[in-house]
Length: 256
Ligand code: GLU
Image (cartoon, rainbow, N blue to C red; front, top):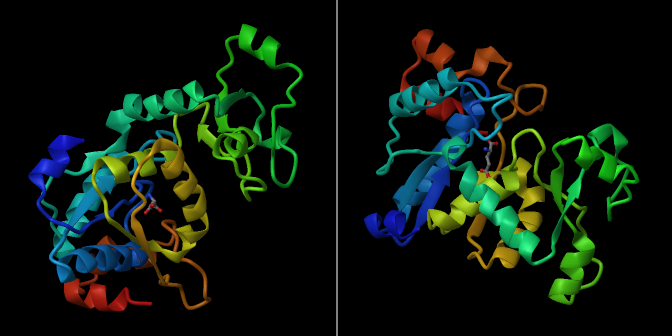
């Protein structure tokens, strides 16, 4: 933790944290702009983080494209980008810490086997059979145990998966761990992620991590009012570049 903080003197640290599951589009150009400009306007620093824990969806070619597209848009970052796929052991330690506190449990249920609504507790009758078969479990946070641990009642959370069975970690764990590790003071990200913030705050509280200040910005939508998707190639930064737009034009076009 010390290394990153020592090399950065900024009081304000933000981050842009794309997942390399496709080419960056206008929505990302706006999100990057918000995070980098917030840092610039406050004499701070914006870091780049590659959120590539999900090997089933992320591709190296999209990571290369992120560097290229951001560079073309005129953004730079003072430290090498942190690639989450290289740090899974650190994320596992988070699960172990919570396990030592008795707050997480194994869960073999697949998504289809889950009941609707808020899920609480482990009602898996065949758990032992699955363990004996060496089936990999997911690890969930037990909200009942968290309530007892914190002396709180009726926390409005479901028993979220903190470690997926296929990748051994989760977005919440990797993201909150890295925000703490990288000394992120201000999280500037899209409104679509706002509903996840309360749960991330709970994780920060359980791990004793600082809680950054959050700014959730409006989203760049398509003319039908829908969120842009990586499948929609018309708005990818590289296709706009090929069409001859300048970086400034793309940044202007990206504003909601
Ligand atoms: N990796 C996430 C995404 O690309 C962003 C997560 C965050 O900013 O907290 O949507």
